[in-house]
Image 1 (cartoon, one colour):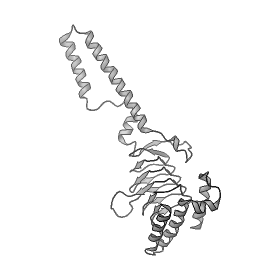
Image 2 (cartoon, one colour; image 1 turned 120 degrees about the horizontal axis):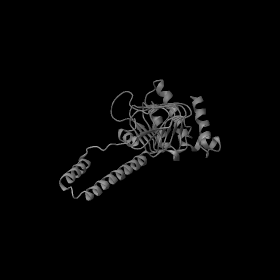
Image 3 (cartoon, rainbow, N blue to C red; image 1 turned 180 degrees about the horizontal axis):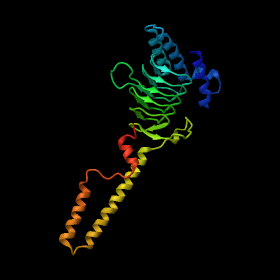
Image 4 (cartoon, rainbow, N blue to C red; image 1 turned 90 degrees about the vertical axis):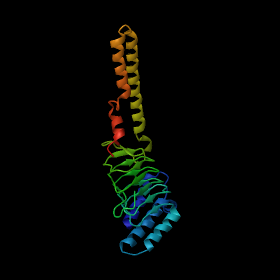
Amino acid sequence: MFLKLRTDLRIIFERDPAARNWLEVLFCYPGLQALIFHRIAHWLRAIGLPFIPRFISHIARFLTGIEIHPGAVIGQGVFIDHGMGVVIGETAIIGDYALIYQGVTLGGTGKESGKRHPTIGENVVVGAGAKVLGNIQIGNNVRIGAGSVVLRDVPSDCTVVGIPGRIVYRSGVKVSPLEHNNLPDSEAQVIRSLVNRIEALEEQLQELQDTRSDVKTRVLVGANNLIEEEKSLRTAPVCNVRNREIQEFLDGSGI
C-alpha cells in the first residue's frame, strides 16, 4: 500500500506542472487525499472489517468531493486531477497510471449483482465529465474525450469521443495524455460528409430538371421517364452511403 502511495505522489509531479513541492501536493491535492483514504479503506475491507471502510469513504467524500467505494480496485500511479464530482463504483477496476479528470463517473447501469462497473486498463485518460457505465472493458492506452458517454467495450490504443462514445483509431501514434485539444471531432466529419452528399444529390436533381426542359417536344415518353426518375429519388428509403465515415457513425464506430 505504501509503495502505491509513493508512486501516486511521484506521478503528480510528472503530470501536473503546478505541483511545486511535496508539502503542497500532500495537503492541497484532493485527488491524492482521496486515494490515501481509499487505500486504507480498501485494505480494511479486504481483511473483513465491517462498516469502518464505508465510513472512511464517506468522510473522504465529504473532505475531497471524490467518492470511491472501498471495494474498487485501483492500481498504482493513478492521478485524479482536481477530482470534484468523481464517482468510482464498488466493482470498478482501474489500471496503473490512469489519469482521471473532474466529474468522471465509473458507474453501473442497473441493480444487477456481481461485477457491474467498468474495468479500466493501464495508461488510460478519462476526460472531464466523461461517463463510463456498466461492466465493460476499456483497453490500455485509451483516451476518452471530455463529456463522452461510453457504454460498450473499447479496445486498446483507441480514442473515444461523443455521446454515445465512438471510437477513432489512433494505433501507433504517440500522444501526450494531457493533449485534450487534439481529440478528433467525429460528428463534424460526419456532418461534413452528409453536406457533401446533399450537394451531390442537388446537382443530380438540377441536371434532371435541365434535361426535362430540353426535351419538351417528347412530352409523353420523356416526361414519364423524368417523373419516374424524380419519384425514385424522393421515395428511396436509404441513400447509397458512399462515405465510410457516415456508416461508421451510424453503426457506432465499433462500440
